[in-house]
Image (tube, rainbow, N blue to C red; front, side):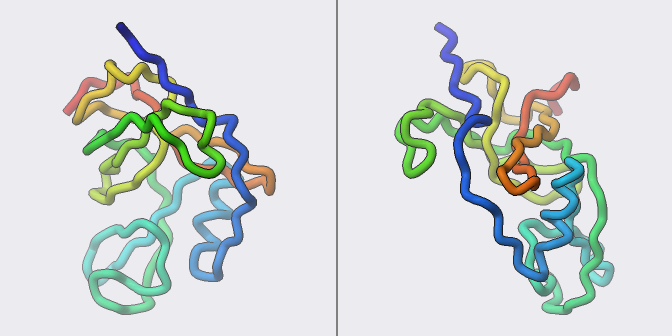
Length: 146
């Protein structure tokens, strides 16, 4: 039997309060664009936004736009929700490894629970927030699994 989880797109979420170092990330979401921090010394991306590089401890981070495409690394079907998710169960939460090598934890939407598999290719979906920002989620991409 195919269980279709709730997509959590309609869950009421509180407004975002960006910090100075995360503002570029959140401002880009207004246009449904994904920016990641890049450390030019380590030549690596990092996520979530931080004031310094997790690789070198330096403040020389650059913002680079990426596609948001990646592969499911891990996932779970949440059957008990807390806070704003209570009443929206079941819903999928996935750890997605973006093509740039960083992991992002987000809701997985528009897919039946038994259709999800490790390695499944995904693309970004943007859930609108009340303040004009958007929240990153993922849905299956029309690409073969890795």
